[in-house]
Length: 140
Image (cartoon, rainbow, N blue to C red):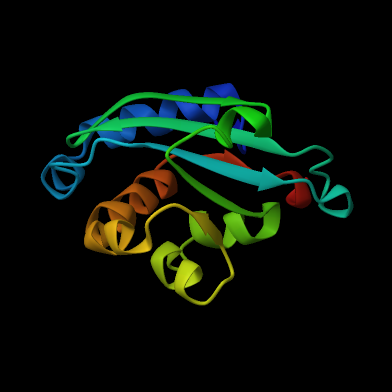
């Protein structure tokens, strides 16, 4: 059954996929920072309010992934901000997250060289999102 994009149900399934991934476990070794994704509102795409995805990632494990107000995500060690449709491109593998940050399509607050060192982990997290069946609000 598909879950709504960037909902609590989505976060739960995403966390399960990350923790099932042996690739992520290896690629995320040594990572010990929280990551916040700010998904900016796009009312014309039926995504009326901004949301924050807070990812508590530690040493190749997702200890927790939750969805709440954008302000929660802004408190994380690394904060990546983009409009809803840009995140959808990342989640459907149209846009590589690291390339997106380098091109300024995703705004990063935090140390870029650290993120770049973990490109493989970031790509595997994207793979994990593609395994979650999602209902995109602009496709309803």
